Amino acid sequence: MHVSITFLLLMFTCCQSNIWNGIVPLRSTRSDVEKILGLPTPDSVAHHAADYKTKDGKVFILYSSGPCNTKPSNGWNVPELTVIQISFYPNVAPKLRDLRLDLKKFEKRPDPEILNEIYYTDEADGISLTVDSGDPETVIGFRYFPESKYDYLKCSSRSK
Image 1: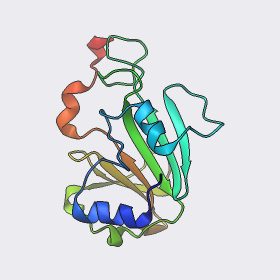
Image 2 (image 1 turned 120 degrees about the horizontal axis):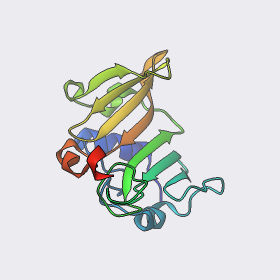
Image 3 (image 1 turned 180 degrees about the vertical axis):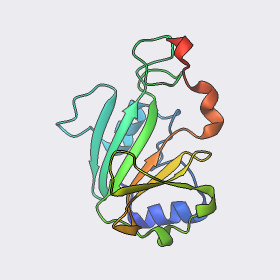
Image 4 (image 1 turned 60 degrees about the vertical axis):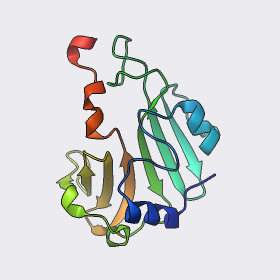
C-alpha cells in the first residue's frame, strides 16, 4: 500500500490530522506499520526506528523503546514498539498553498541546525511541515507526532 500526493492533499484539505496512511502516533505499533508499509529497507537495522520506501516517497518511523520506567526510553509512557513519530519525504513535493492549511494554527520557525529549512508546526494537532527557505512554497517533508493533548504521557526526568 502507499500514500499518494492526491491523498495527502485531500487529507490536509478536509481535516488537519496527525494520522498518516492509517498510522497513528501513540496508537499504532511496528506490526501495524509493517502490515501497511511492508518490511523496512534493508539498511534499516535499528530496533526502535525504521526507514520504509513507498512509491510516493520515503518514510522514517521512530518507535518507543518502552514505558518511562524502562531504560532507555524515547520519552513516551507507551509500550515498546509503539509509533511515536512519522516522517514522510515525498518524491514529488507539493506546494504549501495546495494543502489548504489554516496556517494561523502553525508556528513558523527556522531549523536551528539546518539553515535552509523552515518548519511550520502545529503542536495541538501533531503536525509539522518542512519547507526549503530557497523555495518556501514547496513542502519537502511532513512530520507527524503525538497531539499536545497527550503531553501527559511524556516521560519526566523523574521517571527514569
